[in-house]
Length: 126
Image (tube, rainbow, N blue to C red; front, side, top):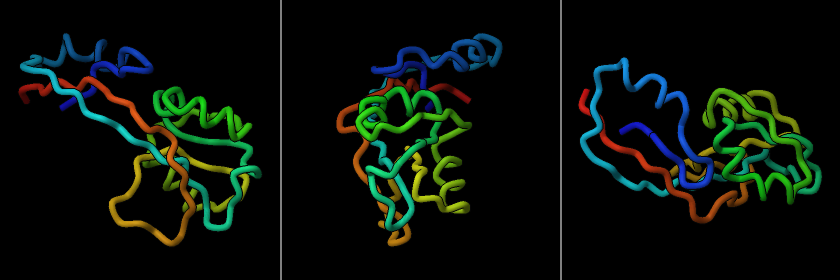
């Protein structure tokens, strides 16, 4: 499955540019709910956050949370990379927006960043 459209942020532009020349065909459509967490290092306080890093679409989907935290959103490559960078370089003034881990880690603090978000992700034949 590849994301084609996001119900909040709109079209996933890269896919629309790459799909025609890829030889892939859309064979169906699925709606997949996406949930993010606002993640910070253990001991960080929501009121101390200055910057939140994630990919642009995730920041757009969670813009109300970023604004409520009075933090600045900074775009990056992907959500997992933003979380990894935060874990490798702890800073109580930084946070990341990423998908939650299935196993709860004791090394970080997290707050729900979205409650109801879905994307259109049509399966493609490979």
